[in-house]
Image 1 (cartoon, rainbow, N blue to C red):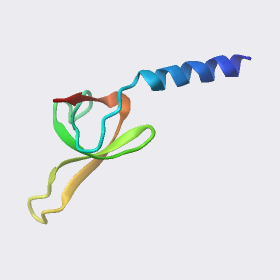
Image 2 (cartoon, rainbow, N blue to C red; image 1 turned 180 degrees about the horizontal axis):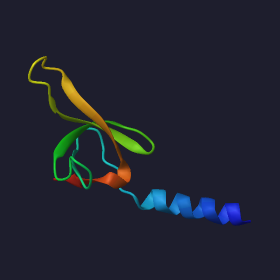
Image 3 (spheres, one colour; image 1 turned 45 degrees about the vertical axis):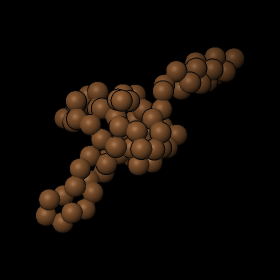
Image 4 (cartoon, one colour; image 1 turned 180 degrees about the vertical axis):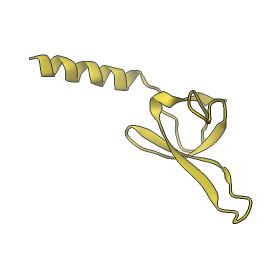
Length: 75
């Protein structure tokens, strides 16, 4: 019974989180990258993969994984 209530609460929390779509711009809400913007390249169940820049020496993209609760979508 208690597990069912806990599971239901978790499901409701997941529904309240607004996920970004591929191509959206996001802004980090906390951590060392707070306030920095990135472009979403993949969406997962609990997180997104975002490109935050390019390595100036090699030209390779710099990517990071961000939990849905740790970013907000920007226009």
